[in-house]
Length: 101
Picture (cartoon, one colour):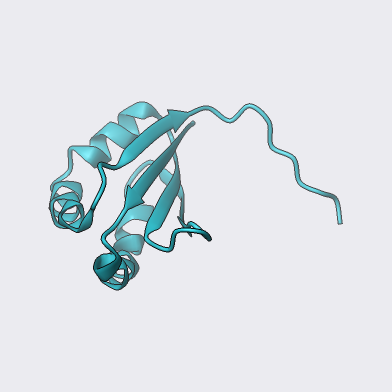
């Protein structure tokens, strides 16, 4: 399993447009072969900073998604809204704890 974290900083005037766009494409992303989890986070201190957090079967599955025409179209439109270069990390989960209820 591969976990992908992407930090995106948008121009303030593009925040609503990004949120609307994400709402329209999120089902396509989660239904892409190899994607098992998709979450979107918004920074509490900087409302124009967002993070996607996704689980992929493998690096090959993520690469297949990133090379797809769907991703290329989505990314070409999304990157026009940035005010900073996005950052991305591929990580392995080492520990996960959940408080017992």
